[in-house]
Amino acid sequence: MLKSTAKFGLGEVVRHRKHPFRGVVFDIDPEFANTDDWYEAIPEEARPIKQQPFYHLLAENDQTYYVAYVSEQNLVPDDSGEPVDHPDLPDLFGEFSDGKYPLEYQLN
Image 1: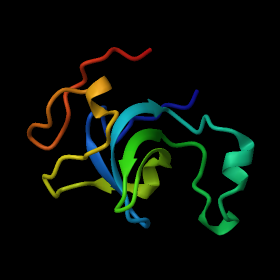
Image 2: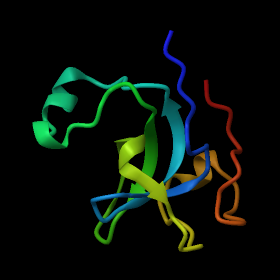
Image 3: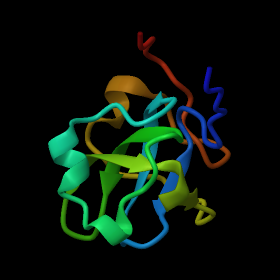
């Protein structure tokens, strides 16, 4: 049995290691749980291993807001101390405090 521990928790603000976006963790899969089409769309040399936590993020960049699905190996903590402006944040979380968002909605 594979046992994995997530490095980041719900409500934490993280940044992508290679791409210019950041987001708030709102769900975690203990290992890859998306479609094979999604996975195969990633260039082979950049594909993350499937046997690691994958994070669902309320993400933002300079142009837009969206939901991202990112492997743990591609995330780093966001140390900016700045809140994320994603419009769906109030549906799940309370006010930004001490670098994170408190969960205010129970997920499965």
